[in-house]
Length: 146
Image (cartoon, rainbow, N blue to C red; front, side, top):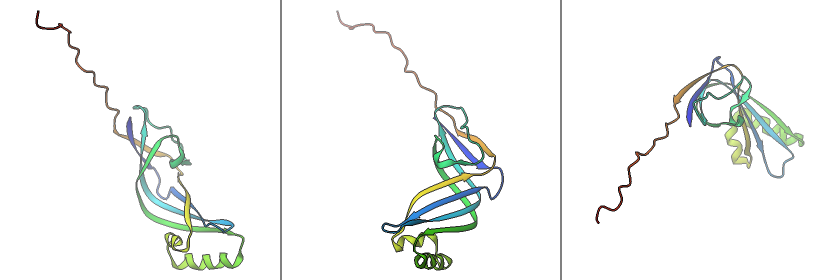
């Protein structure tokens, strides 16, 4: 298995989308965060680079993927899609004054996260596939005693 470093070629091209839900509440909260830079490690079965195109959800791309870093969050937008208007207003006020992660204190949980790289990418091998080591063959000379 080979490991590849995947980075966007353009700044402000990584978009994180989180979907938050709460039991008993009809609807969801969507949070979108834009990141200036970032890096992911992607694993392939051999030394063939991963086939990734602009717009890929790196967390759902048919390869094993690990987040290495995200740098400089440059925007955050929320989409509060709940049926109760009073609750929607309360959530809008809450998110103006608090971190999205503070929603957990109110019983909300992040159920899904997409991480989209919305541009061309630089893909570099950082760990090649290890060659298969063959054990040396020894001749069977039989039992050494007559």
